[in-house]
Amino acid sequence: MNRGQRIGLIALLAFGNAQIALACGVCVEKPEETVSDRLLAADAVVIAREDRDNPYSFAPVMFLLGASNDVPIPFLVDSITKRRLDRNPADGVLMLREGNAWSRAGYANAAWRSAAAKILAHGSDWQIDPTARFSFFEAMLHGPDRFLREQAIDELSRASYDLISEMAQPINGAVARQALTDRSEIPWQSFYILMLGLSDRNEDRDHVRERIARAARLKGEAHLDAWATALIEVDGSAGVTRLVNTWLEASHQSTEALRDVIAALTVHAKYGDPSLKAGILAALARLPQQRPEVVGSVAVAFGEIGDFSRAEVISSAMSRLPAKEKQRIDAAELFAAASYLYRSQNAGITAFDPLQGN
Figure 1 (cartoon, rainbow, N blue to C red):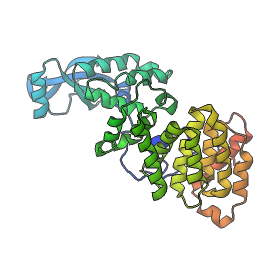
Figure 2: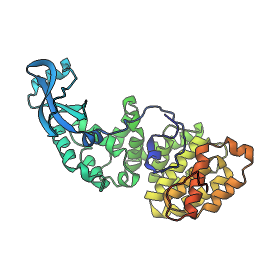
Figure 3: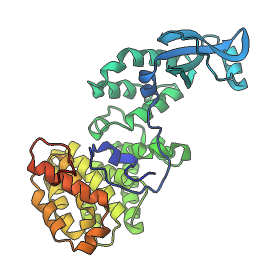
Figure 4: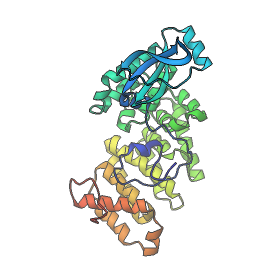
């Protein structure tokens, strides 16, 4: 994973221009866009089948969006798809065109054709109402069509935690735990971990606690941000206390693990049980003096939670740093801290201009 990016819950935090550079133990990423994003960006969306006059070539048989521009579809009909289409004359392959470039968007059976038409009809409203987008795909999560379930998981896994935590029917814990053993599901593992946190089964809750205990023993864990978020969902204030004692107040924990736990605490302070917020803010406020290398991560957390009263905490930690130690701190951390201080001193300003300084 490139520096400045990460998968899992950290993606749920809108860092703005204060990106914290973090390493990831699993370098498999989701596609940058969902299939729905591609549909909504297309100039033309068509159902294509084998061209009767040109065997093994595709030709549009129905336009869901746009019209022909005489640019042929460049893909060949492979033998598996050909047999499937021969058996199902009402089906096709969904093709998208942006400009003159074509791409495939899945085998278009009746279920996917219907869903694609609804996405095209309602997708323009989703920027205004992201809750409607979430609800649309949540309704597909437990349906019979595997492709639509996969699209639903890809969409829901990118949503903010306030929407995820209010799901009417999360993925079953047994299904989520099975997915965590499937390497093809690696890009969505954080989402499945969150499903365990929302489960009402004792075995799933115990599994979350066991993974947190393992992470403490090993001084890290893939998707620790998700496991920590799930722990707070399961154990509430006791979960917060456990994370604070095990990571924030333990000098031996790695910087990467600290950032993961900060992310989880931030999510719950922002979206979770309001009674947890004060304790989380207090724990975060103690951290920069103890672990100045995460001063920027703490600053980002304060900003995400909406608390701009902690400038003294951040500035004090930075001013006490010896010059040599400051040079060893990630530049993104220092930038994030400076951005928070600028925003604290300039109410309503959400961007930091390094050319103007702090």
